[in-house]
Amino acid sequence: MQIPDSFFEETQLLKVLVLNKFDCSKLPSSLSLLNHLEALSIYNCKFEDVNMIGDLANLRMLVFLESTIQRFPKQIRKLQKLLFLDLKDTYFQVIPPNVLSNLTSLEEIYLRNSFYNWQVERSNNENKNASLKELTNLHHLVCVKELCVPDPQAWPMDLFFEKLKSYTILIGDRWGQTHDGDHRLKILKLKLDRRFHLANGIKQMMKNVDVLYLDELNGVQNIGDLDDNGFPYLRSLVVQYNAEVKYVAKMSDHALDTFFSNLDSISLLNLANFEYICHGPLIGKSFFNVRVINIQECNGMKCLFSTSMIKGLPHLADMEVSDCKLLEAIVLVEGGENPHMDFAELSSLTLRGLPALISFCINKETSYIDTSTLFQDQVSCPELENMVISNAKKLIMIWNENYDAPNSFWKLKNVSITGFQLPKLEYVCVGFGLEVLKEKLEEERKKEASKEIREKERMEVEAEDTNMFIKHATQRILQKAEGRSIEDEGINKDAEKFSNFIQRVRQVFLEDRNKMKTNSQILFNA
Image (cartoon, rainbow, N blue to C red; front, side, top):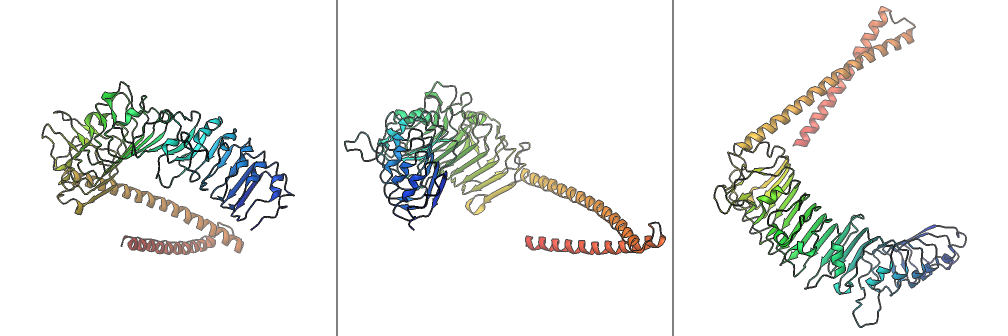
C-alpha cells in the first residue's frame, strides 16, 4: 500500500504518528511538513528508504520496531533533539559510521536483534560500519538495552559507560534469543570462547554491575579475582559452561573484609572442575544476603558447603542441586565437631540426579554421621515447605527414627520423592516422620472443624435474621392489602402461616444447594 504524497499536508500540527504494517517503497513527501512531530513509531513495516525522517527536526522519539528497512537512514544524524531510539528486531546489516555519534541528545537506545557488525577499530579495513567508540560521544546516554557484540575485539580497551543507569550488554557470540529484562538493572553477559584478557572498560563496568553472566570465560579459576573490590553491588551471578572455574571466592587470596555482600542469587551450571562456592571461612558479611542457590552439572564437586559457611548464609531460602555425579553431601562437617546446622529461612529444597549422595552432611574424619540417612538431628529446616528428592541411588532413609530437631520440617506442604529412582530407599520417615505427619493432620482437622463451627453459627444467625425479616415483611404486606392494624390477631396468624411457608421454601432450596455442592465435591475427588 503506497501512502499518497499529499497525505500529511492537512496535519502539520501533528505531534505523534504511528505507522503500523505498511509495505511500500518510501514515505510520503508531505511527511517533511510535520515540523511539530515529536514521536514517530514505524511498527512492523517494510520500507526501502526512510531518510526523510532526518527532516523532522523536533523529533524526540523514534521507533523502528520489527520493521524491515533496506538501508539504515543516514539522515537521522541530523536529529539533534532525539532522546529515544528503538531499533529492536530490525536486523540491520550496516549502520554507517558517524551517524549514532551525532545523536548528541540521545538518552535511551534499544538494540535487541538490530545490529551485530560493530567495526573493529584496530582493523586496517576502511570503516564501513559504526564502532562502539561512537557511543562515548553520547554524554546524555543513561540506558542501553541489548547491545550485542559478537566479536570481543570490537570492544575498545578503554570503553566504559560510566553514566549509564541501566544496561544489558552481551559480549561474545551465540547468546541466542535475548530479552530486555528489568529496565532498572545493569546486566553484563560475557561469553568468550578463547583466552581473552578483559579490557579495562569491561573490568570497570563489572565493578558496578547488578547481574553478571560468565560463559566460557577461560583463564579464570576464582571469580573473585575479576574485581578487586569484591563485587559490592552484584545481585545475581550466573557462571556456566566452564572447565577452569573452581571457586566463586577464595578468601585466602584476598585481604578484603567482604565479598559479594549484596549477592541475592547464585547459579552455577555445567562447571566440570568446580569445587566450592567459598574456599576458606567466610569473612565479614560475605555472601550474607544470598537467598537462592542453583547448582547443576558440576561434576567435580563433592560437597556444597562447609559448616562455617552455613552460619554465614542466614537468609538462604531456595536451594536446588541437580545432576552432580560426585556430590556426596550438601555440607562437609569440619574436624571432629558435631555442630547444629540451622537453615532458618530455607523454604524450598530440590535434590535431583545425585547418584553419589549419601547424606545431607558428612564428616570425612569421623564416622558419627549415619550415611544411610539423608537428614540427621544436626540439620534443622523450620520453614521448609517444598521438597523434591529423586535419583539418589545410595539413600536408604530420608529421616531416621531418632530424628529430634525441634520444629524442623513442620511446615512441609509439598513433598515429592521419586521412589523408582531411589533403588535403595526403604523408609521415608520412621518415628519422627509419622508423629509429625499425625500432628500436622490433627492440626489441619482441628482448623477445619473450627471453620465449620464458625460457618454454622454464621448461617444460624443469618437464618434467624432472615426469618424475622420475612415475618415483619409479611405482616406489613397483609396490613396494606386488607387495611387491618398490625395488632389484629388474624393478621398475625396469617403472617405466621405465610412466614412459615417462605421458610420451608428456603429450607428446601438450601438442602438442594448443599446436595449439589456435595455431589460436585464427590465428582471432583473421584
